[in-house]
Image (cartoon, rainbow, N blue to C red; front, side, top):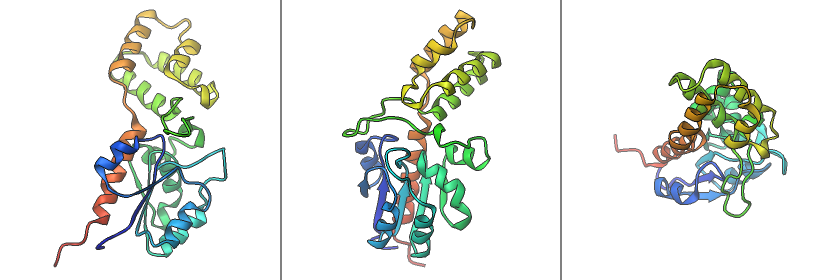
Amino acid sequence: MPGAAVVVFLGPSLPRKRAAEVLQADYRPPAKRGDIYQAAREGAEVICLIDGVFFQECSVAHKEVIYALEAGARVLGASSMGALRASELDVYGMEGIGSIYQAYKSCRLASDDEVALTFDPFSYAPTSEPLVNIRFNLDLAKEKGIISEESREKLFLAARRLYFPHRTYQSMLQEGSKDLPPEEMDRLRLFLERESRDFKMEDALLALVRAGELAEPSSPG
């Protein structure tokens, strides 16, 4: 598709500067109700939904994604709102990308709350940690033998009980590490400081690479 117009809805999942290093596109703020429809109306050929609003305004409607698909746009979803919508609409042609999409698709994740977070309204820098990152990093720590299954479960439940704007690794440890082995908690703090992964960012990068592939003109046959 020569000259394909690529629209990306991006906020706290990935810094805009880093995104632009991966893909030159029309970057827009987290999508709200009607934004996907508007992008399709404007002729976008590839629409990459990464971040969207959850509670501040009405979120992206299923019908507008279907409209964009019927209008001929390729619609990708990953990381946050995009992963959630893709898990619901891939049967209509929306393409889901990444581990978070797969977790929603397999019903390991079900709630919007898993990917919700707060962020600076100007820079989009995250000011809380999404539950999905906490979940997956605790799983990694357990797999590496850093913490036990019992500790993983208690810490995750403590994180889930926190209201999403208050979720951080520090608040999780404050709420959930009581009565857990101190040596495990010391190992976990070190792991989180040095080895924790940002799964939302990883999936966002994968989605941008895929959008770039779709935007490239087809090679002559």
